[in-house]
Image (cartoon, rainbow, N blue to C red; front, side):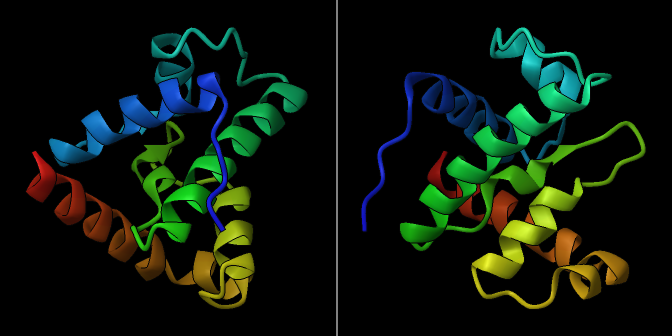
Length: 121
């Protein structure tokens, strides 16, 4: 099932592909600034909005057989948000609390994402 991304989601996706292709990471706040999203990560509703955007992008990538592109987005304490793990559970990767607790899942997914997009460069 091919879903379409909004223009905003496409803009964020392009930034994430650029980050992943250089094996980098990007902070939520930096992503919002670069994509001109006008979201404040101190506001819970805005964190929900970026989570929704990232979820749409990762679901889109998953449908294409690609790793979860949002794995390269981290908070200042170098972690993905709960939404990343909840989406992973929805997509069949396992129970979200276990995925989050181990740390291994997020590192593995980030490495897969880096490997996938670095080869495309």
